Image (spheres, rainbow, N blue to C red):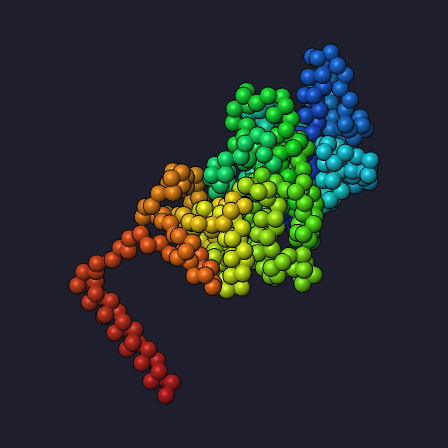
Length: 482
């Protein structure tokens, strides 16, 4: 229903001088889409209040509500173009009045655990980049035709928004910071099995995929949730931190569009916090995360960690461990070089002594669009590692944009993980067999079948003839130069 509208919006934005990239497309679509969603949410809350015999107080003043400035209606419930702003008047209203008004929702007196505060945070980070008021008017008209009042409508919106985030990630060099493949996240969440009452944390939250999929997993059967449990999921379950402004905005909006009204996401550099300052009250039951690939941190940031490293992921791993409660569990995506790099040996030793690394999922290089080779570490804090179960994901096809990872690809991993079974793709090692100097955890599958390709005599002769031909050609070229 909405897919064509999203395509039309991209086509309109493509013509505007202020919007240049896929990242700009989602950023500018997002703030308009969010205000329409907020409008529909307020209308629904007003109806619920009326049915209960109560009065609903709108968050947004009437002058800044969608139906006042974006889509004022006539008696036929169509946009009244006699009073609807457009051109320079619309741009002036958006830049000079609307954004400053919404930005004020975040104030020192505001409760951070409210949607009002989140509105202020989001519009404090965003700015309108669309230069033409006629472009804004076209987009407003398209988005006004969308309705987000039923669960089916909200589901379609959230699904399409995810697709736009994925496209943005694919378009950028650092796509992983915006988008971790959802089949992988869903599988990690299944293995960790979060329960209502547990606090879940992602300190490199990006577009909030881990938190959203955890919410989805925990609300599969909403009818079994009590009002108190639902309130706990809404306000006291999902926490995150994000350094980059756009990712922070998108993560917040993505959570709200998926039904989490007051996301507990902070706009901060997680690694700027000294981990010795993390107290018991700051800890979580579950950490799920995909820290940035290949990032580098300055020396002053490294001073916040007992094991110094310029590699961002190694600092994040120390933060993850410190942020977990005793008995807390984690599912972490990390570059496979962590398993064997010499400069990570002391970190691996500390990690294995303080956490039970019970499973490693080895992923193909094309799971992420950048082609980075990664593994997933599953561990529990509070007891040392005794035995590690490995699973190597070997697929019968090449992954790519037209053939991405899917949940079916990971079904065998989920099935075998329950009993840590050995197979052609899985095996276990005893920690005593790991080199106690390097603590090298490299993936070496002892059960993988090596298939020898038997060539026919004719194929072998043809290859020899081709090599002979290429050699003669090369010598001929050399003789010409002599």
